[in-house]
Length: 222
Image (cartoon, rainbow, N blue to C red; front, top):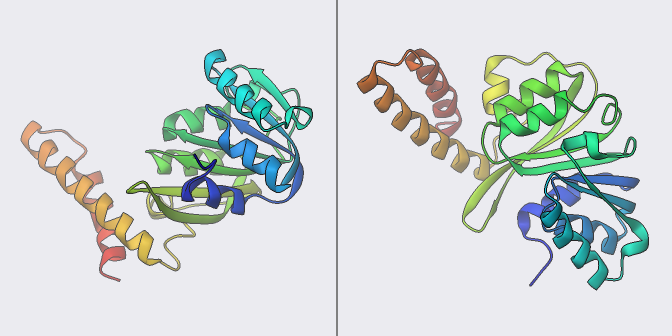
C-alpha cells in the first residue's frame, strides 16, 4: 500500500523544507512518514487526541526505521506539542475543529507555516486564519479517491478577507483551475439542495444560501 495519495502528496509539496513539521491529528501517520522518507524535514512531531490512533503512526514509523527522527504526543490539537514547529499540517477534520485548534494553539503555531485540509467548512478555517493573524498564501483543489479536497497554506501576516474570499477562497478565485470549477459546481449543487430544504422549513438562512450560490455560479460560468 502506498504511503500517500494525491491529497497527501500535494500537501507535502505545499510544505517548505524545514527542521520540524508537526502532524496534528496524525491518525495513521502516513504523511509524516513520507515527509521523513523524502527528506522534506529533519523531524516530525506526530500528535493525536487518540492514543490508539497514535499507536498506528508509531507502528508505521517503527516498520520504516524512522524512530530517531520522530516524536509522539497524545493531546488536543497544538497544545500537545512540546514547542513551536517550523511547519504544521492539520488535515482530515471538519473546518470547525481546525478553526478551534488554530484559536487554541497559543503561541505554538504563531510563526509556523500551516498546511490545512478541512473536509468541510473551509470558510470557517479561513476566518480563523484571518482572526489569528495569518494570511493565506496558497490554495489548491486536488482529487483523490473520487473526492475533491481544498488545501490551504497560510503564514504569519495580516489579512482582510471579504465574505466572498472566505467562502470561495482568496487565492482560488483569482485563477480558477478546472479542478476548482468542478469543485465549485459541486458546492453549487449542495447549496441548491440546502436552499430547497430551507424554503420548505422556513429557515432564515435563505439569503446566505442565495449569496453563496451566486459566488459559486460565477466560478462555474467563468
